[in-house]
Length: 445
Image (cartoon, rainbow, N blue to C red):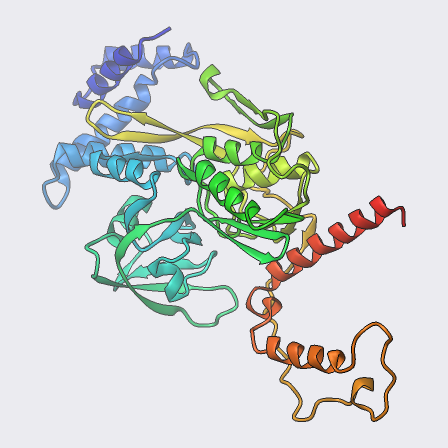
């Protein structure tokens, strides 16, 4: 087995050479014919060295060796897949800070598609989300500079900057004829990855915006707070526009609702890339029904949670087909203080499904819809309670029916959940239906 340090020395030595003798070329050609998968491709390195020398000598402007080699490394990784990349020391530090939940920028998770920057999802309560950036948007210009031809790292660097400074994104959006110009003001992004509230008595709501190192602890705190308000008959777990994050956080969130069994496993070429994660006993909801909301912006770690709960029949997955990022990236520090983010494995759901480029298909599909509340008629329709000498129902005191009608009118002033968030309204209705069926079953009806 070749020592990694030795391998690096061999590659650098070959790259910095200006050429090979004829005898060396013949030797390289012979070595190429006899090459095994672990043999260094000297002939290809000779070609690289030749091009490297030409650029140094003939390019219209002088280019430093550091830039040429760094760009070569970036290109080598970018050519593998959209998620492998090289991180210099500054970018590596920003990545480590980002996993803790605070970083500078616009608040969007991005990738590359056909040479353009594609928005995977905007992060809640950030400049991007407030400005109306949507999952699936293609960014074609940053200020007046075309994105085509940029690396993802270069584009990300342009979008970063001093808090308070502005940038104009030109985006192409599906269903919109003309590109949109959207002005954003950079800010310090402080991501609160877990939000929660009671939807109605007995029905809780937990939203996870991204998976950070403390996400599982924050979710447990949120669940405990909800339980203090009464027994939970059901829970909506909202993973919409969740771009993913830390693998261990996704495993811990899944484990909170499972009592046993496999959560996720990974398969790669090396032994370190082969991992299996299983649930420990103790379902925090004691079997109460769960509806998980996903959409096209739900990616990576959020797909791990949705896939695990779906395979174990522990939750109903509702919404749209997810993004389909089923690969694992490992951060490998380098000797210069930077790192490479390298795709080292694919992950699989407990049932053995690879989600890579496929996504999670919801059990109940809910399309992107926006409902409008029907305006109240100028005159309320006449009901039995409005008729003179109407009979009482025999259960309430006189005048109670009229009071209930007036109470309903007052409550109608609030915007219905179906109008503000239709998928969430459908999730709540589904939980209520499950609860009603469970009560009838217990009663023997």
